[in-house]
Image 1 (cartoon, rainbow, N blue to C red):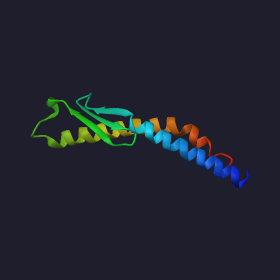
Image 2: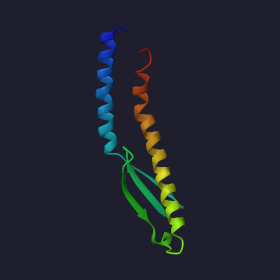
Image 3: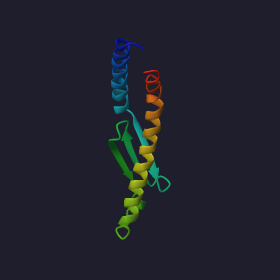
Image 4: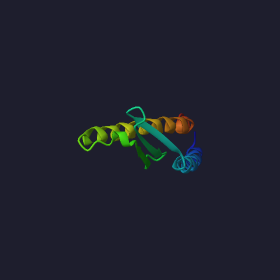
Length: 99
């Protein structure tokens, strides 16, 4: 592959990546813990957009449990975003072969 083709492909990949980033900003992915007691919603850029806590989870005597539930729900949502990224960026990653 000559250098001009490489540059042309790099520019096309850059444009495709920018489009995917825009799409992902509008995606919402939720993760939960405690059987749905805590739900965290992230966008495709890993930004937290919402947290739902069932009042049953709020026990002033056991704040560490609530904190653990929030962390677990966030981790669950993050894993879902990572899977989404693999799916969306998979074809783009294949473009690097042969470079």
